[in-house]
Image (cartoon, rainbow, N blue to C red; front, side, top):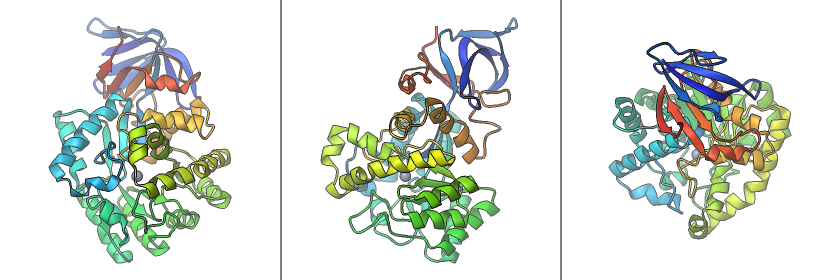
Length: 400
Ligand SMILES: [Zn+2]
């Protein structure tokens, strides 16, 4: 057994740290004790002065999308093999940045499924991957931007068949486009309804019949209402949600995944920001404050919020996922404890994995990160990690 001793351990329910030691057996947490109780064969890792948290869960990532391209459609002509190599490195960077679980909301010709296999075989390192396969969409201009990411389906029967195809490939959930996207051609409007209510219901039916959840990309308010009505488990982005939509989400416990980083990170990358196609830059900037206000209101109304970066969009780099935790505090006024809960417990609940992930307790996977400073005092402490452990294996270890 391995003991992590001398540190402060985060309790996701209460949002507090307490002095404790974590006993790790194999890939799981075996016990939480006041102090290490090592047997003769056991090792003790000294985490004195450190703050131990569950590995973070990013509920909205595109591992196959390269972030140094200012124009997201640049990838359209890349061979799958090149994209697979990129996705493999993106997975490694994501893990080393403290995100031990990722929900990929739109892959690329299923190369991300191969990356998951490679991680399982130990050929490379990366987070635990929960994958959508291709996202389901109506015929739209966005398909030309991301030909490897979109599965076109029109009408409920085609939607059912498309959802089944993703599950047959190994998808863990179904992702649908309820409205237009922001990072799309000029003729696509994020405020336009895409899938109809009937089509969304068809996707949800297949997801839920197979014990999977459904994630709905939605900016326009009516698209959000349609997705919630259809049974979506999460709303991605949610930009133009009004109070009625947010109240409905709170009532039905539909998770909001805000994805601040899609805008914030782009603005922080001067090269990407300057060379981005103007219509995309304009859209992101124009919707920024609207989203900030929406997330504030959602939080006030009790909508469950899960951390999601949309990493893979221009300038939104894989590995900088903790920036979303910072944005939730600085842009939407969440407390650091609420932000950390969004990045752990709430993500685990959305993935239906709360018995294995998202908290530090016996029986959970030993997915643990450590900061040097207290993230409840300053959430930016997440930027300086002393430990990243996934399944009991330390992939980054600066502990003495
Ligand atoms: Zn996305």
